[in-house]
Length: 351
Image (cartoon, rainbow, N blue to C red):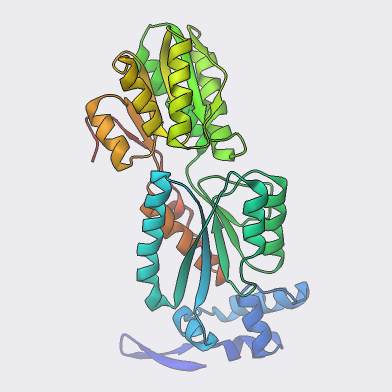
């Protein structure tokens, strides 16, 4: 037990050796329990945790990292492609990584085609065996779920980003309530349209992405209940690709002269903007999109986009890093701090 000064008074500070002695186990066993590693009997874990509570042990986490002899290594798995929001999220992770170097934590970014379940699963399975945590934009695919569970079973915490996999052993989800986002989009579109009737188009990246499914479900529920004069068209997929989404948007406009609204569930908004402006109907069709990217911001101000639902990529990157570190060091996650809000922007309040 060490002594340190607190307001001029010497105060006893509990050490790992004290915990090991109290629990009747080795120092290595205490370290395994604190770091969530496998291979420790459940009763031993309970004994160590009880000793920690009795002694009110507060670990010096930076000192513990120094004692490990190497930094924590977290892998961030993001989509390939030109998705502007994902590029913003990557930039925020790189900025977060710069700040965490002094904390003995390193973040590395890996790019994968997240629309290809087999490719994403293979990339997860190829991650180094000695990593300390993974954050991944996940596809709802059996092979991806199996890969995530395999990583967790090795004692490595996994958090999902943007799109969740709640049926897996992942530890935490970093993202907005996507069901609520879809409901909010429907309310905004219905209010903007007032008493107009007509058809509404939905465009998603993929219905294998849970965030897109949840947004679609929330949107459809509110439109069906609150706005019976609006007819929802079957959802069309564009893989969050600007060119593909442009083709989808152009087809919607050509096929439905009575189209009054569009909700883009995912990315690819530049494609819809181009289709609307080419048609000359941009001012008569209410368009709700996601994410306040530089492009979306510009066209929100111009009036082609009527409202944007946003999730802050900086908050998400910092939250994912804090959460992985908390999971790795077995300290509580602060729910209020890690809750990602749904921001609503119109042209009058855009930052």
